[in-house]
Length: 440
Image 1 (tube, helix red, strand yellow):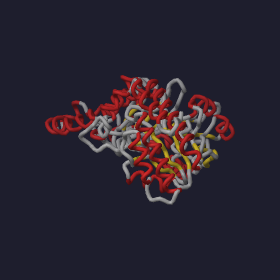
Image 2: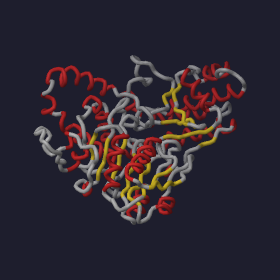
Image 3: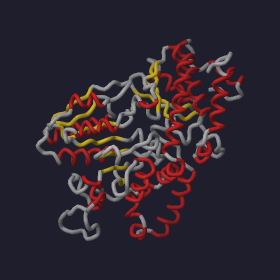
Image 4: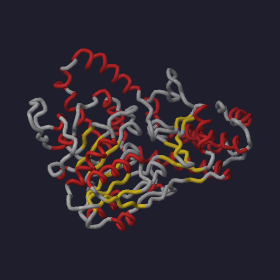
């Protein structure tokens, strides 16, 4: 892809890809992009897999909610629309990108709380079993929650030793599940490497031993196609502030397969999950259906923003989103191979697109220092210990030129450090001038 000066061909490619990109027009809907002159615009935002950009429509929706729904309807809003909002949004999310029929998804609580509720419900449904299967490189919260449940219930954790540059395979799951397995908890896309697990195959392996499977979808929802119903998944959770752009701390979502809803008993018995919410009776009687997995009062304001992204997913289709995600990550890996590999950078994500989610992790001993300098200069990737820099490429809001600029900035900063410089040096400014874009 390199031209004579190593710049012209990949930049021309990025510009051409942006021109033919069928999702390019969605970028203008986000605050802070180059199409938005009213807000600060980072040179490259490459952390959409941790916190998505906000949508203009969401800013308007929240302002309108404060002014009218909350401001004028006040307490009446609960009866008029808010009470059912967690279930309505859940159904919309299920149809747009989870492959879940209505009545199986709800919004509420944090990912941590939902992991606890569904995992506890799962192990309690198999009281004679003594083991939980999980992997060593899953996101810390997932591991910590299960460590606590194992301690509460006197269970044994069976660990899969997962590769930090790969992920968990069906063969690894097969080697540890057995007649004592009550639950298997895994992430669909590994938070560190971006490895995309084979949901269908792994779920089938666990079911051979009648174990339940709980999938963490936090790094896959809104980025890769998910087919919960077709894969016969039992339980799933995921956050809404990454690719769904729900905003910092927006509530998570939970999925419970329809035929398990009357079987499982969730451990956090709150008024919102009771059969007759406003009777306020002396004892708890669980509601029927998915509502029984809710607990406390829904965070209505926190649920508003994700609705706009869910609507976009329904409009554009998750298939189109996935196609662009693959193209963006392929482009990023090509740039890393051309520019960064000669400086000792390695790709810590799967190169096969069928095994890769929506982000790419690259490793080098200096990546912590590189990330700090980049952030100070308005280029925003993500760092993951010990040596990983993550390029989170959100298909709706990330352009190919932005990806080009971001990887070029990584190259310039790393080169500067290796040469004993404190920044990207005059060469970066000269280089940027040659292509008519501002230097770092």
